[in-house]
Amino acid sequence: MRPRSPGLLLLLLWGLQAESQEEVRAMVGSDVRLRCIYPKENSFDLNDLYVYWQISMAGKGNADSVVTYYLSGNRSADHSDNHYKDRAQLSLDSMKRGDFSLHLRNITPQDEQKFICLVFQISLQLKKILEVTVTLHVAANYSMPVVSGPSQDEELTFTCTSTNGYPRPNVYWINKTDNSVLDDALHNSTVSLNARGLYDVVSVLRIGRTPHVNVGCCIENVLLHQNLTSGQTETFTGTKDSITEDPIDGSHGGEPRPVLSVLVVLAVIVALALAIGWLCRSRCPPRSYTGAQVARPELALTEHV
Image (cartoon, rainbow, N blue to C red; front, top):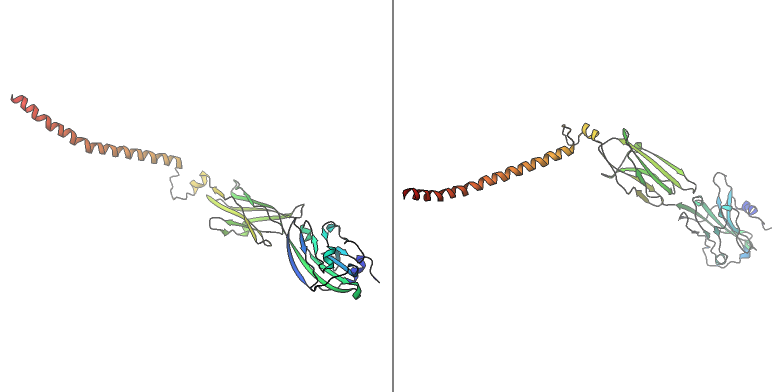
């Protein structure tokens, strides 16, 4: 006797093992095709077939949830899980040619499941003629991480944020001076699911005060083989007090840099003035001496007459 409901047929499917497996990756919001194709060229009578696509329900033992199915005599496929209503589709024309692939639209993070395709032929006493397991991996790009800070406390605090990604990311902080990875103990990361089922990240880095800091935040999406690093370089130069207490040039006078600049300019002006005076002295005496030699003979002639 033929089963008249998908639940009755599912009783016959327990304990079956997958005969073929493959993995597929899809981006959130995209469409995907999960392949389930009869390996030999053949044509099928739809009145002689039962076709099921189902997933295992996590946390419910061996219970399965039917995504969509086709029963002999139906003019179209039907759905048992409302989550896939209007999103999961079988092509009747393709099934006649042995292509029982499932078309999923508008992928969500909840679609990351193991999908099982089962095809039975009625004329062979409900013999299973095809079984394929397709593992669907779902991914979403994280937004470019943005770093804010530092705060003006006793220690420097930077905050990194990135949103709407999937799956759960790895978070790193790097020293952009030499691209080294900072110790995990220096930062605390919070990863949470938002209303869309995607992950948001907030990571806080705390380091001791130093005159110069150049750090970046890196969000790694392992599934996409993607690393996003904060685009803006965060640089912090210590306050006047921190420079005076721990000068980096080895001086101990503590003179503010503007005063030193003025003194240097004045020294240059004085040096130029001295140089110009020296040049004038070295050139002017020969001219006055020559004039005096010309005048003396004239005086001598006048007195002689």
